[in-house]
Image 1 (cartoon, one colour):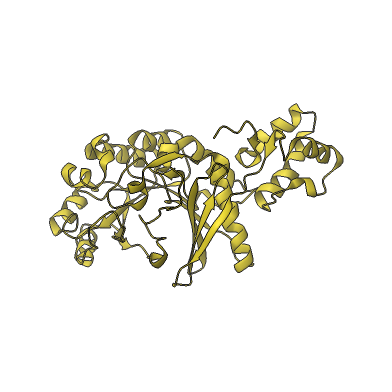
Image 2 (cartoon, rainbow, N blue to C red):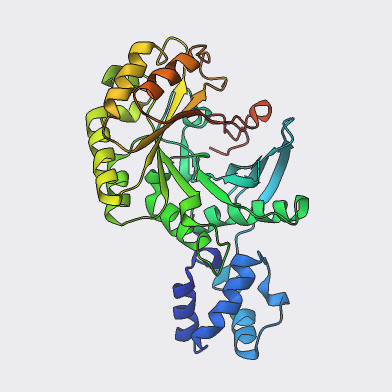
Length: 354
């Protein structure tokens, strides 16, 4: 993205205050503009009534070819799942890239699944996004814009409900785009804006060790989910190519360090694939790997993709029982949107401009 303008969606509240003060507008005016853009989802603040100093600044600086703008991805398509609870949005960005964002309904809550990249460079063999390759990182504003989009959709369909949870489990590897992802989550978790609680935001990684350690060192308040999928180096590297760079031993060491530093639990994601990683021996090895780590294992039946010929396991219940007997909390993730390719590992924008 070579746009010389600055997105208002990419600014923290403190940054907006600083900009206004630098331009001769008292910083307390930032609260009104922040609320309009981040809490209420306004796309054109030039049409709103503000106090004269702020109104003048907005008219001179926002929109058109001015210094500041607001991302508004174009909705290419909205696809409703037959489960009645899931909607997938195809959003076209300013440069023509197309990403996918999913809104999922559960008992008492709604969750947004966000993309952090157009495509993905990690190459996990069973993941549709990994099969499509990497185009580029998303900007802070493009990540925040997805939250705004699903909040507007939710306000229309369920006006008395609010977006409660966010998972960075869409297209891309969040820790590969660390800076933009963390800043975007800082913005959407700000109480003066979208106000999604930090403890209700989950960041999923296939095991980028430096990013995990950095999250711990920086005291990031978000939940960490690690896609593991293998209990030996050979087993994991066959499914997750990044394991060849950050091997299983270094990943587990990073996870132990993360728990010790933060005192937080890690959610380990395990896609069950028939004959690949679903045997009782694999379950016992996984239990040994997680011994002493505050962990919860989410079992995910393999979702079908065109680029992978594997099959969902029939041995999931036995796998779960072995982990539970070892004292490791283990549940099956509720499946959503499988019929519209909105489930785990299925996101792939066929219209992506490569």
